[in-house]
Image 1 (cartoon, helix red, strand yellow):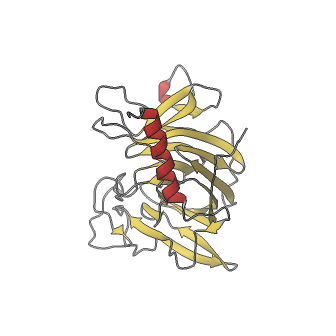
Image 2 (tube, one colour; image 1 turned 180 degrees about the vertical axis):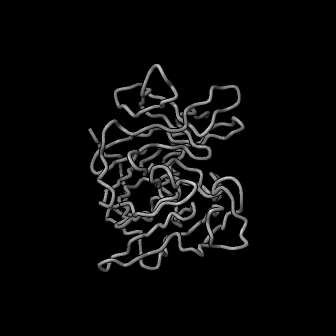
Image 3 (cartoon, rainbow, N blue to C red; image 1 turned 120 degrees about the horizontal axis):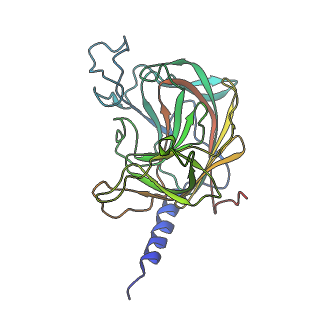
Length: 299
């Protein structure tokens, strides 16, 4: 008997997501602990402006120089601070890095509180404070700017919290429109009433290059700097929903890997969760996860 492609695809989704959600229950589980036992750290390339780490091969922080690598964090870019008896993840931002769950997860609801610190560093000293939550991350480390996993990104940046970025070989479909139909350079914005648009890290041979990122739903949903924001990520199958302070700001569908050589895409339904260090001091607390049996109806 010959199975239809759509049936094979559906079976793949079912098997892949069930395997990676088996450790979760419908009760909230805290991922953040005093000893950080649920996470690995990967530190990227130190910027040449740093006066510490003498003798290390520094560079532009992204493309030139040598990453510090896995679980080698001599400057404590990521550290756990105990505040009122509860663990808080302090991200210095001094070097680009990732704080990654050791386990892979699928079919889940992630919730965390986030706020900005004061310090900023090169190569992003003179621009917006930047951070992000990468999900469905796939190893090896260092696939994007020699530091981050292949993954979609829930952008956490001043004024842009909830945007979508596609890192190192990820594609998806999002209902979106151009910000200005007369100027494509201004980019795309999520609009649930607009047609579905393809977004990906890169194009495939012989096809137009797609956009790789887009802005969240029009509006200001962030708290002032220094106040705690509530960030939520819902993932079920190959769909994800970004929520900022109770507002649905992005719905991402048909997440998949996009090989550069044009070989067939595969569904992206699970992976590591990675919290970024990207040039700005930041804090996370109450990082919790629970199992999803289905995607909630957000209408």
